[in-house]
Image (cartoon, rainbow, N blue to C red; front, side, top):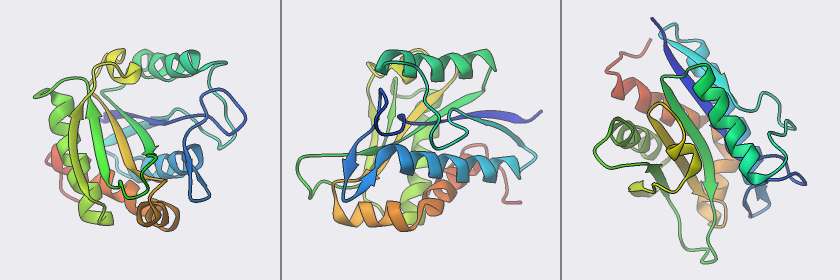
Length: 191
């Protein structure tokens, strides 16, 4: 039976509730949308996976507020029901020197935690971003309310010039990194 992966492309389009971070001329919701679609396409071509995305078009808006937007994403994953939930985000910091990739999970040494290790490793190996580790944050709604192992991936910092250029020029590389991490986690050979 296929492994069901729900990909949540974090945030809504600019001008709507729950729009994301901005930096170096890039918008988080645009990067997350594209990386999510690339990842969904990779998974759709692999018969071992079944995939759904939270935003099927770049201008799709989920919810009418920050909280209803998050609830819509979690509700869709739980209702399917997905086996795994991957929320894709980009980071920002007031210090433009801060850079790298990190993955958030609800608790340490859980299935999500091990999955996060592989996804992080896959992204860093493919894109050359700095490895900022797997971090626990039990307050994040999408990690707290999903009924399956869930990870929140911060691909890189839009506010860092180097990360921003990687996100802008190689979104496919980030998707491949996540895909490679999934294959390693499930101990599946490349097709």
